[in-house]
Amino acid sequence: MKKVTFITMMLPALLLAMASLSGCNKTNTPDNIEKNIEIKNFQHSDCLNGTQNVPALNDDYSFNQEITFTSQNSLLHVELSNILMNCCLDSIDYEISIDEGNIIINLKPILIDGGCNCVCHFNLDFDIANLVFGSYVVKIQFDGQQLYDDINLIYDSNTNQTDPLIMN
Image (cartoon, rainbow, N blue to C red; front, side, top):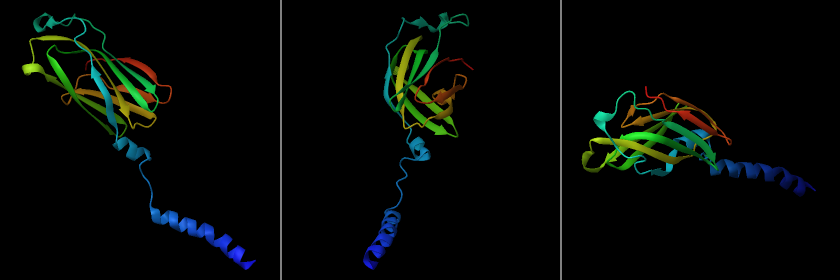
């Protein structure tokens, strides 16, 4: 009877000791997940509706620029609509970071032969991975400069939010 009691008492202590020696797996904590935040599946459209000569654009020229956030599985899908850029767009480099509840998305257009004297609208879409549910302020930058006002985002499993992009 003493053998059963000894084994019964020592087994939990032994398992606890083994677990403490194996260390902690920190890959699932919110802080570590957000440090691994990344953009996936980045795409941009072709020029949407022809080109406009740069001198023809003025303050009266209107177009609706929007950002849409949608929860899709474990990703946050983002669509930027009607983004005005140089019509000789080759590709777009991108970076994402998070700092104290601010999601900073920096886009850097890569132009063919340095660009052309025209602009047109493009749609961009991509997914953000490794973002935990919560409230954020989204900042969209082009070449490190923020052109639009901040966007408040509440990200959860039901996120389906569209906001206008307002130039600041």
